[in-house]
Amino acid sequence: MIQRPARKPRTPPRKLSPLRMDESALQLQLELHDSIQRAFDARRPILTHLNADTTWLLQIPCPKDVVSRTGRSRFNILIDPWLRGPQSDVASWFSKQWHAIDSSVQTISELQERLKDIDDLIHTHEKNVKRHSPNKIDLVICSHEFGDHCHKDTLLEIDPSTPVFATQKAADLIRSWNHFVEVRDTPSFAVEDRDWRNTSIEPLPLWLGVSRIASETDALYYHSAILITFNIDTSKRRGSSSGADTAEGVIYTPHGIHANDLRHLPLAQPPMKILALLHGLHDVSISITKQLNLGAYNGLRAQRMCNAKYWVGTHDEVKKGGGILAPFLRRKVLTLHEAIEKEKEEKGHVPDDSELAAMKGVQFAELRSGESLLLE
Image 1 (cartoon, rainbow, N blue to C red):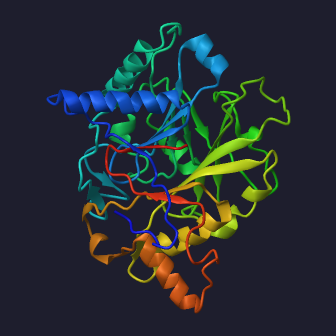
Image 2 (image 1 turned 45 degrees about the vertical axis):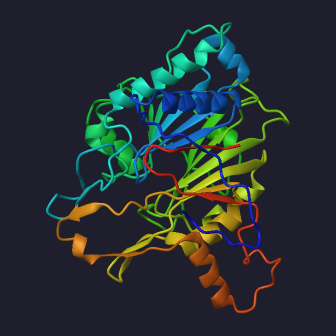
Image 3 (image 1 turned 180 degrees about the vertical axis):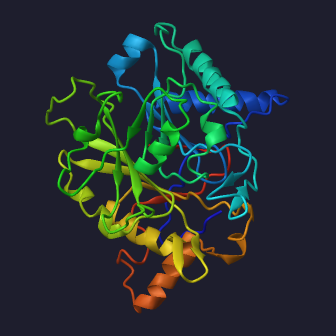
């Protein structure tokens, strides 16, 4: 467990039961059903870690009028899917990795079965809701073209009619497979255009936007972020606007993003409240020359810039690796508490009420493979 500063206790984030069920234990199954029912009744997003690395399922509650029309209570977004098997970049002799911990679901079919099970459970308690559309993966997002974010074997298991949003290089790669009907380049959320509604492009529902935040000085967009924005209180026509368009957002940055590249988020119009920041704690580099994952110190700065309610660790699995690159990888492992204390040491005397003394208002969580978090 992550240690937190003792002088400012907080209510821990509410974790849900693991996705994978032990069917031999009836009591455990009943508790799982109860926790799922409570979570769905809350009409709040649910974030599930499908592996120990950086594959996520984000389930966002649909606006009430969508529920009444379709019977669908959740919009399911699959992020950076890699469930099993090796991944390699450039060539297997250069870099090849395997999960050190099994994913909570091993196939897309198994994930779909879990979604169907949840759907059956929820509708058991909702007698008056019509079921027109099955619970399924509604959208796939790939943040990078690398195999641990854009895993071909996993992606090819997904229904071709599922829309995919991907950064340009990843989108070009996915299109080359001729599998998916629709692959869209993820639009930018830039300083020049701070309106999240402009990122709600077809085929997304009107109340949901997906965009990319990156520095133009980072030619490879390696240290960038995916921004998922949503307003579950409205589903009006595309292009319309009102004063009720304030959105919530989830920032997903598996390699980390520099805080300065998030500077326009507090200035967004309509206003945007960042619900969760997904940013790892491990500092990973290739020898001393190339920074890969920016780690906990950068995460502290990014969190203070976006002021998320939840900070969730990601991309910190210590995978099994091979290839000529493996011996050159350097990993510094820190807890959040260690990073805060180290930062305070470097700053000298820090008043107890300073933002450096603790992470004000944020709840930090590390989810194991299969664990879920209700974003309240």
